[in-house]
Image 1 (tube, rainbow, N blue to C red):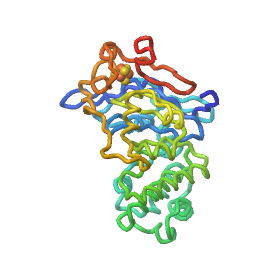
Image 2: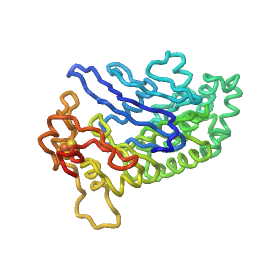
Image 3: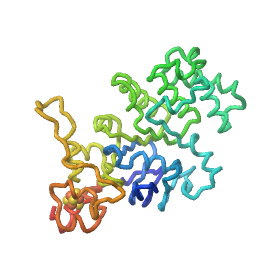
Image 4: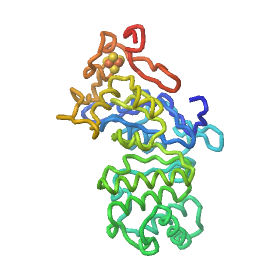
Length: 333
Ligand code: SF4
């Protein structure tokens, strides 16, 4: 993407988890960049490494996980900073302020002992945006109004257990936006919510993105959300990015056999379907990941080389990259 003004660039990221059963090679050489102002999606099945990648960006990986190598270059006022090398204190100044998160389960993101207003205020005070909690609580009313919380003057005094699931997630979004971040990482932000509330929250995110001039990294397994929300998409499988493209290009012209299978598995309300397509086989155990292309045991086009060597990352069209041997002299496509 030639006109990309990158806000963050992940290069060759490797993350392992050291468990009693063995070393889980969760992220295996992931690289991508997010352009300022876009919504970039990481999509894939549960366990493919989307959330681990998102948490690695600001070093939120906890033991037994470890970031082994790679870099996460964040462009802070135009200057590149490697977040994996930054001191903890300086990183804390970025995390929650310039880069903030919305996690999937609002109940576990909120502290049950404090009111929603206090939690918004505390986040702002921690990053020096308000001088006192009292001032923060006053500002929290406006923030809750921005995230379309009904009756924000009352809700600001409510504890999490007094709010519905949708209200809690609006509260979490309010906390996340309270310091005017540049990049918001939304990790399956609606998975724990009812379908109607999901729509409202995604509409809210779209509205806020436009109003607050945000860049969004959206983590999801839902191709419908990808189509609705994203500018560019990276498809992950077993700890690797297998394809990346502009959202229209990806849906119109998927290249990787895994992406093609994922799209075939999406129900189409315009077509009569007797049964949903599924991808044969199971997600691999990442303690013993398949050699070569990690998708080869499930791929209908697998060739000899696929089980032997990792496929190269190829640019098949401007801004469209795919990691698959089919697009080399071996596959002849
Ligand atoms: Fe299939 Fe081989 Fe391509 Fe992997 S590299 S997706 S196994 S054709």
